[in-house]
Image (tube, rainbow over all chains, first blue to last red; front, side):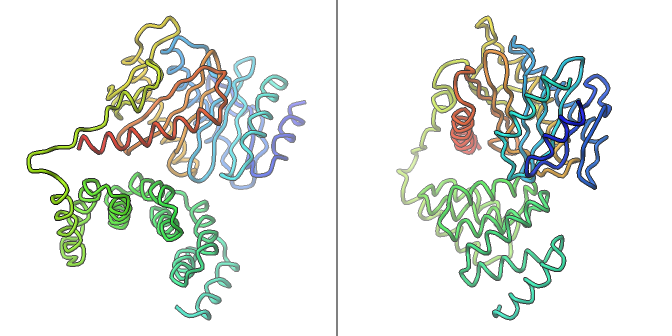
Length: 113
Length: 264
């Protein structure tokens, strides 16, 4: 099941890697990464960043975000919280179809986690 | 640069796509007026080296040659985020500002450029000319008022907040779910977010962050960095499509940038 979810997301052109991460400690639960992509670093950074984002929505009295998208000049980091304290994370190239990846992550967050 | 040299550089880049030879190749193509090819080479290089200020400087020069002033402006602003003392970016932004008729802004960039390269005679000449142009346009003693940031940032109250990197409010305001002012609390939280985002994109080799989007709850959020020292939060109800929110945030960031520069 998890393998199917990861495989489905990595089929999107431009996706460099997808991970399922434990939000509390930033550890990798499962991943599908291109060679040279540091999964442990992505997991730790994404979990930490997602925590920071929660602080903003909490300050606004809003629930946790269902999607976080950090776009850099050289690519993007996207994360969607799932159930059971998990986070679905993707790292993608700048030219990725962000809309398709977003939908895929939301679907994965509902299915795998 | 002759065609044979371009051919040689092209061959070299094809042999080793990670090579920095994209810089002289794109520059050579730009100088020959092959702007489309130059842009392709430079964009691929910048994607490969997202932390390299020189790559964005090259991209901005190509954009400027193509008459794409806004994109060139973005490119040189990115350069300054990576390297605040980049001479080429200050010169480029001065040129674009002058071309747009914004002599006061052009003057500020040129003054910084001269500080960085005090021995550049041509630059001093340009500074004198712009000073003259600026002086000729203003009645002595008249200072153009800075634009009202609340008008630029807040078409509706409580939906945009501009803060500095230390988490202090510069302009605008946001309300929480109960409609109460949450500006100071959100500003403090934003400082932590942007520091964390910068750390993440740097360590992951994604280059400087350009935008952060948060979806969920009754509202969606967009973050931008109008300048190296500020962060802009724009909030809209979730009914507003994500693409439109991104566009609104982009425009608000441009307004905020102008306003902040007027304050300097």
